[in-house]
Image (cartoon, rainbow, N blue to C red):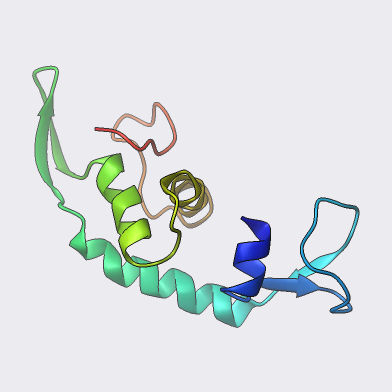
Length: 113
């Protein structure tokens, strides 16, 4: 995922631009302009996820969506091809950008209903 994010989305680069992303003790800097633009695009696309009132175990939850739909959005917008990677990126959006959360706060984003 790291090499994909580095080469395709230019999210970060080695501090001296000497190495591709690797699992080593190397320093990388984030390209804040790219990150902000990409996150902004994803947030703008999020309205495509079906947000509505839902019932689960006889309890009604207002204005919510299904985790699987959020993962599908990340795949459909080209953020990530494999769903497993899209799920990881979705969890970053959940934890770092607070784009969404579980209705009860019970667990991180999951690729299921």
